[in-house]
Length: 334
Image: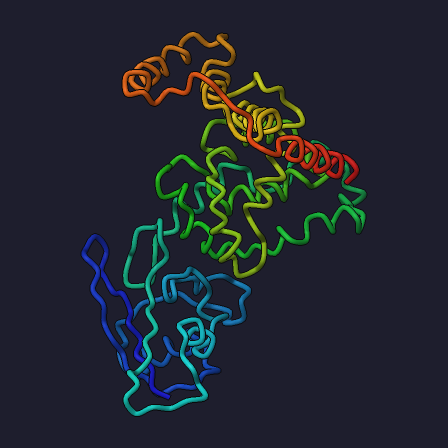
């Protein structure tokens, strides 16, 4: 079957342009097979990364039809099926199907599909991506784990550092200080390892502003596109639970945000906006600077008739409260 591959090509610090390549291929051919064919038989100047060809190394991560994934993992048939192409019917009037290929996002392009991964690795290094221990004076034995302890790390240990989650991360796009889903998922892997001696230190670092876990916007993109099923956002959520269990709501604004939101929903079924702004930003009048920061907004809302002077609980608030309490009880049992 004939396929048009539209590859986004560019040199460093230059505008991209799309180039089309017509291939005769099979539905079972991987995208990497097709790129190799282009490189070897049509255009030797095309640049892309590859290595293992078996979804192990993560080198061939790129955007295929707008989705960050591995070129060695996806095949022509699955990609065309996503676009609604029906292989069982043939029509001479049908257009030749197209597959678009582009470099990863949130990373500067070096050439064509090759991106500069330095920020990706720098952010990983910030979370100290290895087990730290002060017990290094024990040369007569290994640092062992039980099978049960290891099983807790199986999912996150599948990460191959391909960069797909980093490419799709909305938080990375708008906040250069955010460590990224890959780094925080790896952070949980070390944080949850009982052999690590810096448990509390890691909690404090991951709890710092929006460069840590509170920078995550919970968009779920990293979970949906991870080719190895690591679910980075789920690992970030696990760290949040540890921090929320260890801290009070007065500790920081991100912690207050989570706790105040929960308390207001439990009380009224939906959020009392007057209380939310007051409790979150000024911490019940304890933070005068925070209170003053929202005063101009409050005055503008009053002037435009947008400030709610009263609050009516939603219908079914008792059921909402019962569900939240039941969820908390189940979490405590787990």
